[in-house]
Image (cartoon, rainbow, N blue to C red; front, side, top):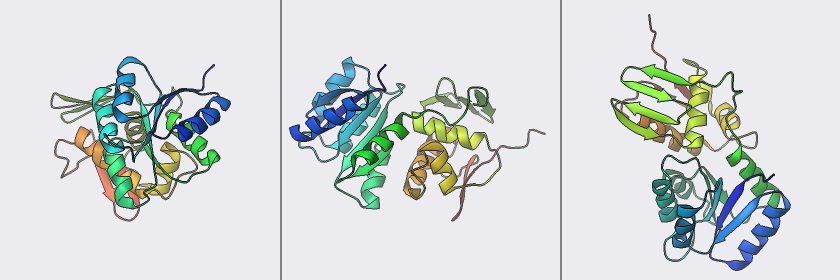
Length: 235
């Protein structure tokens, strides 16, 4: 059984060849595209579990391609990892803002790449019995099984990582959760210092579930510590 279907998007043939050798040897099915436009055409017609997307392609670059993938596959579960030589926090935030779930800086080792792939394909940190199913707040309805949020009738789809992060927060209502705990629980044990991931994903979630994202009522920041899901007292 395949460990997952991965589309590698990179304009350099030698990198695609190395990727194919590595991924197939580790049980993955792999397809390849040499440009953002070619990738979008393939994604229209085939289902993939994960996209490995080079940021620095000619023509439609990685950021544009990432945004286009998210728009094209809105409502479809799909993980995206961006690969790039750029290592500044600004570049990472731009990639995450564009819809990436993770970010790997070149050069990287094969074990690191495989660990990131496993983390991206890893599902919810909950057992089926403990995972939340539905939550109704004032004007907000969250359907965890459908990966959907409705705010006063406006519906939004949650990506897999958004869903996992929100689920973990909801399962610990009114408790301050530290940055490291959130990263390791949602992304995996190899994470812990990627605070920019949380900032970006919390902003994305606030835009989807808060009636006024600029004045959050539910997804609260605890400065220098972490985040907290505020569940109002029903009584």
